[in-house]
Image (tube, rainbow, N blue to C red; front, side, top):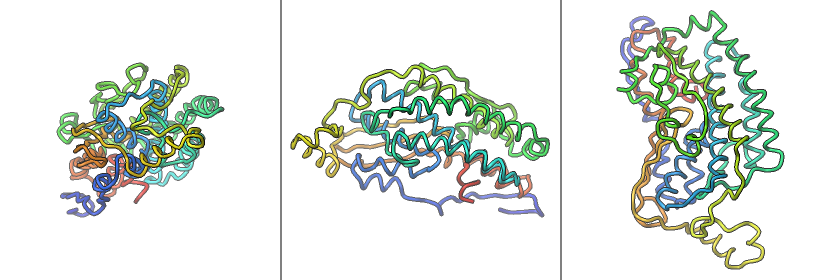
Length: 365
């Protein structure tokens, strides 16, 4: 940064120092072993990362995902969205010294992770989506717990809004900060809440539906001014819509299998491993050697909590991808940091950074 007193007059964002090499890690592993790398790219949107990678490989191998698995994936994608937005909102409070909001958001986040643990056995980095469906069906008692969460969560969001939108100090601290016009937001490649806060109603769940989003009713939340307050409100109000989607998934969840009947790419049922030597050998070879993917390339994009998360996979016919490239929305969103900060006080920098990427702005700070 170049400062004139406390005013930012120049800024050059160099994010090369936090490069993690995930794409090359993908290319060194079989497709099957690449799944656990996906959630660790963004530990707040771990499920969304898995969906993008698994979805790209599924298109390459042409596997048909059962309908029930599609609904389950949609449900957990929205739980993951709430999880990410809660951490964003809580750490935004810390920036202003409002530590109580952080604790409230962690309380609800813990309930979200309880639901993940109930189904997957772990709270994060679950490896639940797999090629052809999901690893396990929903356990007994999950629907009741999820409904209880959906009944309670809107009241909690109301409380957050009372603390944020109803607080004059908070409003004055956020309004007019880091304004981005719709034209600039599009030119900078912004997506997700950062783009919609500028008044552009672009949401991949609407414009290019995947999973079962085309069968669901929900509103695309937008802002008007494109400032920090609108970005804060967009993420907070999106949690209402995620609850609506989860409730619809619970009400409309179809029966049937949760994994495709494709022994070439899918692990044999667990019960067969005790009675069938062929199934045991197939399981061993699939996990250790993987499966070959026909030569080709594909790009799959989903609406992650941060925005458009894309996964490009180039296959050369072997069991390992020749190239994997991730379109990380936060990576692209950071291009707008200079536009948001130049001419503003240095005290607004962390706040603006948190709006573009909650991890860099809050959790990792």
